[in-house]
Length: 357
Image (cartoon, rainbow, N blue to C red; front, top):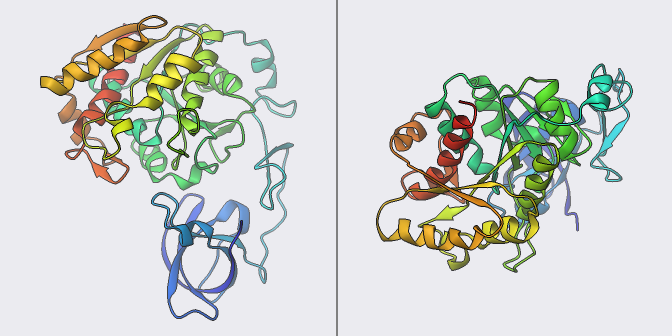
């Protein structure tokens, strides 16, 4: 449940589009805390403002979401929103927000999406973790510089796209053209109701040559075969196939994860692609060296009955990953600490780019 606190803003740590990172002194407590304010929801806090906080994630010590979240600046409320839009996201929560959906009747793109039947064989790279996104883009860029890529953000992790520093930095560096937030996620360049309309918008509204589908930061997992938010990767494969796209499945691979279930090919990939994905995808198997590479190839073979296994060389991808404008990081591990993880995602990007040849 929610841990409520009342505090006062003592400093502004930094700002990026849609987000302010604050220092907040909590009333009745000795120490200050870090807090995030989504300025499009609560306005822009100033030093000295009173703020209402949700400190649940902070108290739990969550690695991705370890901030207090600003729920309101009660003494200086933002103005009421103006303009069209009746899609409600984060529905029936205290911070439900109204957005203009690209597919709703008030959208200038409604007619386009009403008529759109497919994505015309667009490659759609699907990944389990948000941390795969910059690596996939590095692979695309290494193979086919200048490719127009759109990120489709699912709602299995963070709901606000603004939470992701990576998305903001990738957009600023022109590695992605735009983000489409689908389902309950919000705050992208375009909003869509479903993964299907998100992919259609990526293709027909934003002109994507490749779409990369992944959750926002902070996915949820329980250590059980089915209890993890990454099952949505299998559902995204189905959506891409239903729209006559070319699904490309990026394997979640690790040589350094302390949890055995994620060593080699993660059980998340085996379940999402082997059980949830009912349509066929190109499952990209990176040609990693040595015994670990053999292990990855052997474990990926479990997916061969339903999917096409595509071995992709990783030559040059280490350099492409190092050159990314967004440093590689997954579960607190850097590029050099878990190189295989990022090479697997980059190989998926390389294969998707080759499909455009």
